[in-house]
Structure formats: structure tokens, C-alpha cells
Length: 254
Image (cartoon, rainbow, N blue to C red; front, side):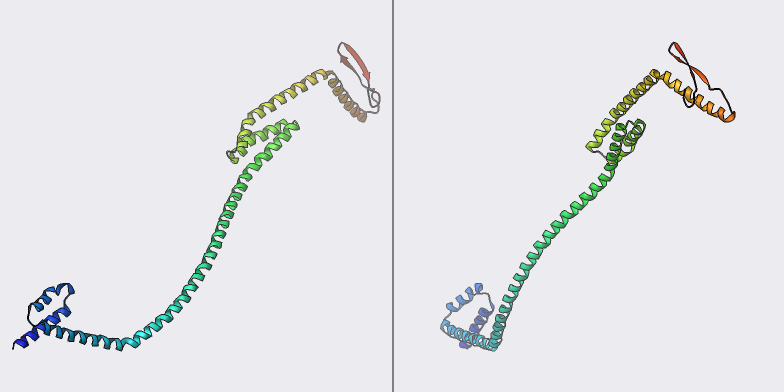
């Protein structure tokens, strides 16, 4: 009866060892060594170990062929993985090269877009600036030809219309600053020429009057010749200073 109880106790301890964490089997092993049958327990423990070894061996033998097949497939997959790795590296290299070319092309396209935008802006600005320059050149031509009235009209159009449209440029500011000076210059030059003209008329008023009267008498004489067969030649007296000159029409002259 005692041996049966001992065997049952040993079986319980073995099951507890198999199912318990190794950190907690200290008290169990102490109870075995405290007893008198630890030799018998060691024999049963060896038997249980051999049983587990046989089960492990059976399991390994049962799955050995699958393990070998798995290793073979793994080696094949390793070779394919190496090929795939090489292809990925090659594809990545080509992709990097193409990417560099694409980035370079994008930079060139960006520069071209910037240049295109700058050209369009320049054309737009020149569209507003060229009329100003053309009108200013025409103004200089009119002033050089001494046609002051057209020059004043161009100056007014330049000041009120063209310069505000052109924008804030330095040459526009210079032109705007020069407009009052040009207007004053035109006015002074025109007044000077008018005074010279009036002075010339005053100096030559006698000759001008004489010529004008002669032309009137000529027209009258021609008209009278048409109306009558014979008309005495007209006679006129011209005053030159304090002297009186008497002239008679003779043919085509006095």
C-alpha cells in the first residue's frame, strides 16, 4: 500500500514538473529529496525523459521529409530572391538615372517658362513704351522742322495719354520732367519767331504794300481789258518815305 501511494505521489510530482514553470518547481523537488524514495523517483524521471525523447524523435521523423522539402524550397526561393534583388537594384538604378534626367528636364522647362513669362511681360511693357518713344521722336522732328503747333499737340497727347499708360519707368519720369521745359522752349521760340516776323513785316511794309497794290491794279486792268477795247494804262503814285513816285502800267509791268 505504501509503494502505491509513493508511486502515485511520484506521478503527481512528474505531472507537476511537466506542467509547471521551471521557476516554481523548487518546492516540488525539495519534497522529493525530503522523502526516502528519491532514488525510485529518479528512475521514473529517467523513464519519463526517455519517453519524451522517443516522442520527439518520432515527431522529427514524421516531419523530416517536409522539413527537407521546406529547406529545398527555401534554397530555391533564396536563388529567386537573389535574382529578384539584382533586378530590383538594376531597375532602381535605371529609375534613378531616368529620374535625374526628368529632374534636369523639369528644371529646363521651369527656366523656359520663366523666360517665356519674362518675354511676354517685356512685350507687354514695350507695347506701352514704344508709342511713347515714337511720339517723343516725332516731337523732336516737329521741333526741328519748326512746326510748333503740331509739336504742342504731340506734347499734350504725350503728357495726358501715353506716359500714364507706359508705367513708372525712369525714362518716363525724365520725359515727364522735361515736358514743362519743352513747352516753355516751344513757347519762347515761337514768340521769338513771331517777333522776328513782325519786325520783318514792319521793315518791309512799304515794299509789301507796293507789291500788293500793283497786284490789285494788275487784276483790275485785266478785268477792264476784257470789258472794253481800250483803256488808258493805270497810273499810281507810291510813297517812299517823303518822296512820291508816279508809275504807269506798260505792258506786263509798271
